[in-house]
Amino acid sequence: MKHVNEKCAVCGGELVEKEVEKLLRGGNHMASLKVSAEVCLHCGERFYSPLTVEKFEKIENELESGDVDHFQAVGRAFQVAASF
Ligand SMILES: [Zn+2]
Image (tube, rainbow, N blue to C red):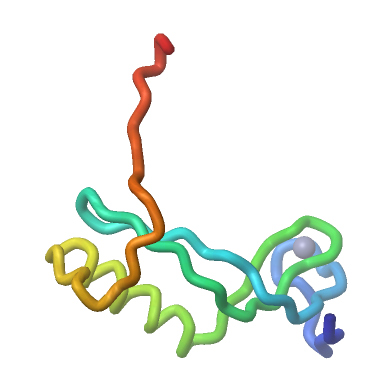
């Protein structure tokens, strides 16, 4: 964990740089990826660099268009009825 100079834009809390898992969705597909983010120790808000956000958008577009052949499948996603 690395401390960051900036403060949380939401609550002013202390930020640390951490590797986090981010879940992305596009169309019927989902992908998770590990990225580094600045995480607020106080409220838990995550802040991503503009480059990381760009990457999210690219991946979401690929998921949306079904262009997922180059992603590694790690399991199947299921939807469970709320009455379950
Ligand atoms: Zn905060």
